[in-house]
Length: 123
Image (cartoon, rainbow, N blue to C red; front, side, top):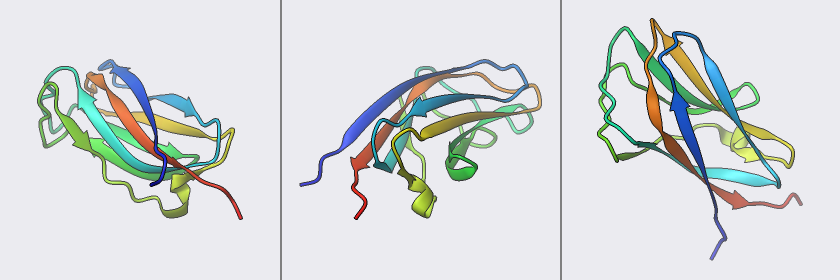
């Protein structure tokens, strides 16, 4: 059985219309295996004023969720599809970037993200 490390990060994004980001520092070599977005309140999709929550390792995109077409219910947990290949591997002193890419006047998001990592060793 492999050990998993779970990190929860509270996300509070205002509808500012300007992009922002939060960073989660890595304290050891780990591979991101799963990411789930959790909404504290209902999020109603809007085709012109919305936020895209992106996960990045450096400049590499790992996965994202845009709120331009699909709603998210309060209390719902939703998986973010990860597609980063080797970029899913983090070294100690790396950081996972959670980018809030606002479109139009933007959209607020209040909730969190659950990140599941697997420790790794380089051989």
